[in-house]
Image (cartoon, rainbow, N blue to C red; front, side, top):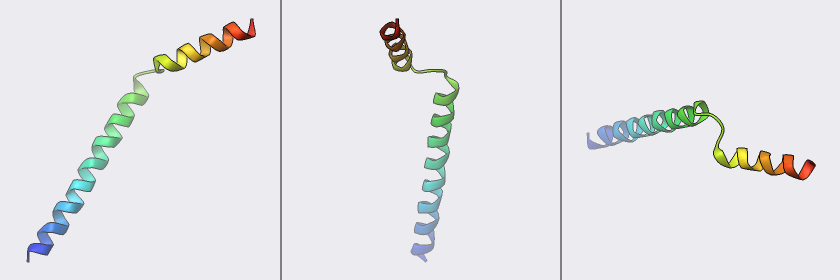
Length: 49
């Protein structure tokens, strides 16, 4: 009956990793624009002037 526990642990690990990755993605999305993107926009504005 060890294989039943193994499958349970694998599925539980995948679900936990899914929640962690989703939370990190959401936190990054809500944190606002990345500094690198702002620098690229500033460079494009200067090139356009």
